[in-house]
Every structure is written in structure tokens, then in C-alpha cells.
Length: 311
Image: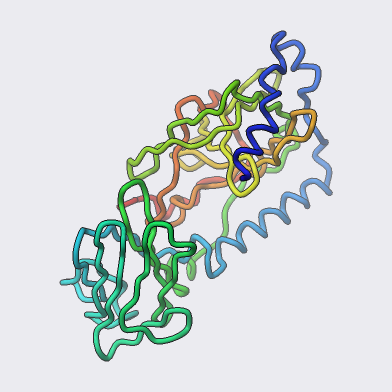
């Protein structure tokens, strides 16, 4: 599996830099001048980032997050439902979503058309433990599916005409400066390690960490614990700009998995806002305490600022 191969690949890095910071400083450096070509490359990256946000599966389509109670959960646009979908987007009483242990089923009321895999459905199994893929249901511009967070089950709702998407005006950024693009060394944990990550709804889970990234900024050494997501290093960090010019709950950064020399590139010009800065229905992981940088990281995305409350 990828995870075991990943940790095996980087286990040898636990021996790197044992002689102290001086050895590291020889390789820690800024990687580029702020050339027009570099600025343009960051601009292209940002355009792709915004395009993904606006896509059918992008975060800007999130229109609801509903936690299921054991038993029947009625849904529809009427206010008397257990799960109240957007008004005018679905009939008032659309059906019932039933949670039984780790299994979720759906029943659609007569006269209401809901599609599953493009075909009308009346009753269906929509989640169970070990299911290969979770099916999406749809009605008009709405789609929804089951998610699991910790020991809770919920319905994540998307709307292709969601207000956050329709009124999206782009993300402000700090000026691109190459000094925020640095070499980092991944120091592997001596043995496989998990770190506690708490999300914005207060749930804490243990996540695999391949190691700690060591790097220099303006002559000072810093470190950040890394996670792994979709074949890349995933860094959740906080800094002194949070709540002032950047999102109050930190930002995200991705980096390539290190090569044979154990180094990768951290480009803070690509620091991005968590989905929770745009919509109220994401379950964003928050920076662990050790990932607070005691500096102003004036690079990457600034806070979008309109959608910040999480149910």
C-alpha cells in the first residue's frame, strides 16, 4: 500500500542532520528570483486553483452539512424536516434518510423524482461500512451523499447554483515574492507516527505523519509537521497574519514528496485558504499546535472573509 511504502522510503531520513543546524543551513536557500516568469507561473497555478473551487465538485458548491440521528431523518425544503434543504430547490417533503448503525438508506416520497446514477430511485442503500464508493443522489441543481467524520454520519449537500459559487469574486493574494519559496528537508520520524488533528467542528483524529519539514526563512530555522494527502505532502500551518489578513484558522500548503536527497520545495506563494473560508459546510482540519510559525507569512492567499461560521 502507498502508506507503508511511503514510510519505508523515508525512514532513513531520521539520521539526516543529526549533527545540528549548521549542516542543514548549507542546503537551505531561496530557490529563485522574483522573475516575470515565476510570477506568471504562480498566477497560472492560482487560476487553476480557482477553477477547481468553481467546478461541479468544488468547495463553492457546498450548500449544506446535516448530521444524521439514529433512525429516520426526513428531508426536503420544508422547515418541519429533520434536514432542511434549500427552499425552492426540492419539494417540501422529499423523503426519509434512515441511519441504522453504520448503514444509511433513503426512501423517496411518491411524486418526487430523485436520481441515483442517472436513474429515478424510490429506495436505495446509500452507505454502509466498507462500501467501495459512496453514491450521489440528485434533484435539479442539488446533489448529496453520505460522509463519515469520526463516529458521526452526515449528508453533504451541493448546489450547482449555490450563492457562494454564483457570487464568487476571486481570492486576493499577497504579491508574489520568491523569498517565500524555500528548500526544506523532511526529517522522518524514527518509527511511524500519528499526530492529533482537530477539525473545525471539534472532532479529533490521528493522522499519519511521515516526518518534520525543516527550512529557513530570512536566516531563521523553522519546522512544520507534514501529513500525506493524494500522493503529496500536506501541511496545515498557522502564522501571525491569521485573523488579520489571512483566514483566522490557518492555511494549507502542498509540496512534492522528497526525492532521494530528502528535500522538497515549500512555496508559500501557494499557501491556500481552507474551504471553511468560503462556505459554512466543510469540516476543515486545523493546524496542530506545533505548526504555528511565529512570523508574518505575507505570501499566498488572503482571507476571503464572507463565509466563516461552521454549524
